[in-house]
Image (cartoon, rainbow, N blue to C red; front, top):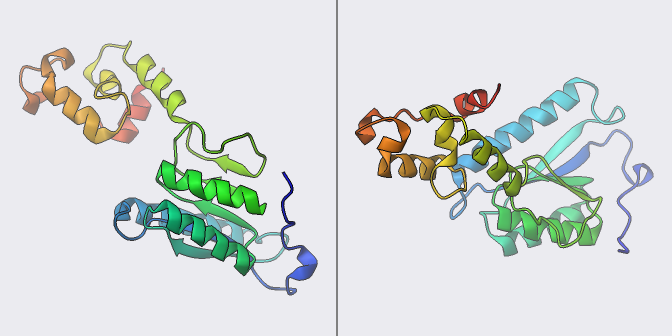
Length: 203
């Protein structure tokens, strides 16, 4: 794929910050709470980078844009951030939005690190310009299936529901069939927190 070059160090003013575009759902219909948590994490990461000297001695600056979990808005936002000359993109939460953003970013030759989307095919074809932090959903399903082999309610909790592994759906699955998880009534079923669930999978 022929992509335009990114702005070089010579094209930036000496001492100017290295800008990174942040794609975050901050308004409805996006999941605002998740967007706020994502933004807090991005800001924390930028702070840590700057506390250790920045990028080649230059400070890192996060340029945040609200995608509102809308694919078309995300594509337009990628275009806007590219025009501003950001060095890369990070963020996004919803898979379908991240996929659209990834396609546009890749077409523009703009590196994109996706934070949360779990859709398997984040891009149509393999590309060196797009990466992700969260594992693909097919990998997650394998983990849930493995957890279901153990037998305790806490460990089986991750394998119930419709297979997507979302806490709300897992909770629904247990409440519909509490006996399978060691309880006669839904009120007695223990739902472990996400962090505890991770610990429960550790041998």
